[in-house]
Image (spheres, rainbow, N blue to C red):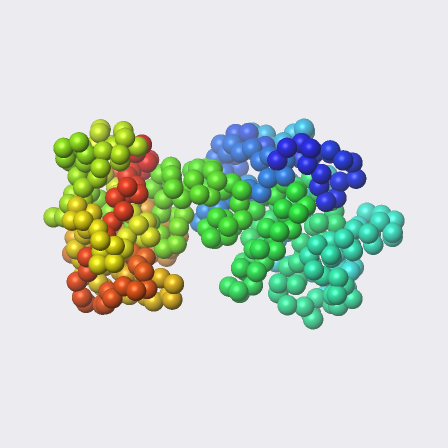
Length: 413
C-alpha cells in the first residue's frame, strides 16, 4: 500500500501506517527447541498478511514475539522505523485480538470497547468518538447498551475487534479470532474482518491453522512448518505454484492428490507413467518446466488437484489424457461430485507428507505399499454418472500437473 494512504483513524492526511519487519528472527526454548527458526518477513504498511500452518508450526509464537509477549532470542523485529525487541508490549503500538473474547461480563458493549481508553485516562469526548466510530464500522451501534451475555458469538467477536480498533494502533495482530465460532459464523466473520481491515487500511497480521481462512483473507500468505517459513506469496500463487510438497498438500481443499510416477521422453513431449497407465504431455509442459528433463526415467512425485480431474464421458478427452479406475466412493455436494478412486501406484512418503498426515490425524507409516495403491479424489461435475463400484474414465488436465523432487520435496521447474 502506498504511503499516501489515509487510514480511518489518521488525523493527518498522508500519514503512513507502520509496516512490520522480521529479520532472521528465532525463538529458542531452554530445552533447545527452536519454535521459530530464522524467520524473515516484511509486511508492508496497510497490508493484510496471514501466517498459516498446522498446530505447533510456530505461527502463534511469531505473532507473540511481534506483540512483545514472547522474548526474541535471535534477530530483530521492526515496527515502523524502530527495533522493538526490548520494547515492552504496552509500548509497541499494536493491538491483539485473541480467539477468546475476554470481555467483561458486567460491563455493557460501550464500556467493553472503551475500557482500555478509560485506563489511559483519555478525555470522555475522545473515548465516545472512538467507540461510536468503531461501533459504526462493526455494526454494533444498536448493541452498545447490552452486556456480552445477550450477544451472539459473532457479535462478541466484533466487540473484541472494536476494543482493538479504538486503540488506533500501528498494527493489528489476530490470533485465530474465529476458532470459537460455528462454521456459518466463521464465514460471516471472515467477510466482516476483510471489510473492516480494508476500510481501515491498518497493517494486519492474522494467524490461523485454517487454509480456507488464509486463502480468502490474506493479500499474502506465509506458510510455516516446524518453525520454518516454507513459502510466502499471494494466495493464488501458493495454489498454482507451491514451492514444495508441504505447501502443495496443505493449501487446497480437498487436498492435492500426490503419487509417484516416472517420466519418459515421448517424441517432442513427455510421457508420465502411473503404474501401467500412461499420460501424454505436450511440449508446452516441458517448456514451462525445463527442469523435468533432468528427471527422465526417474521416479518423481506427481501432484494433481481434484478440479483438474473430470468424468471423461462429459469432456471429450482423448486417450493420452485419460486414466481408468474403479470408483470407491462418491460425495454429492450439489455443485460438485467428489469421486474417490484408487490407482495402483505408490504414494508419496516424505517428511513433508508425514507432517501433513500428522496434522490431519492420520498415519503414513504404510503409505505407498498398500495393495490398493493411492486413493485419488476428483472434483467432477454433478452431471457425472460415476457410481460406487463402477468403472470410470477420468480425464486429466495434463497441463496442470505438478512435479516435485522425491528427495528434497521441492517443486521441479
